[in-house]
Length: 122
Image (cartoon, rainbow, N blue to C red; front, top):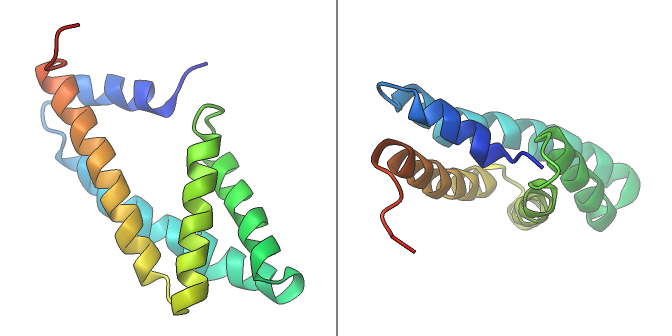
């Protein structure tokens, strides 16, 4: 099963500069995704289903929209966390901040490995 990291690894390996990938993945994607999923979907569903069911449904949609079978469970769980943060704070900003942190670690590690090779020998 191809995973999102493999596709991004291929992109990162062929980039002269990873700046655009990092900006898009670290800043633009979290802002866009949290605005759509926690700013629109979750509150709308919450009015009809209650917050727990809305969190499950919006998180499932969030997972499916990443279009990766292998990434569904982690993105679904993150969607639940982001929904909980929205529910507790009534703001998308805690989710945007955490989403930015998660994407930062993953993409920076991916770019470092793609450009420098895996640092450990097994």
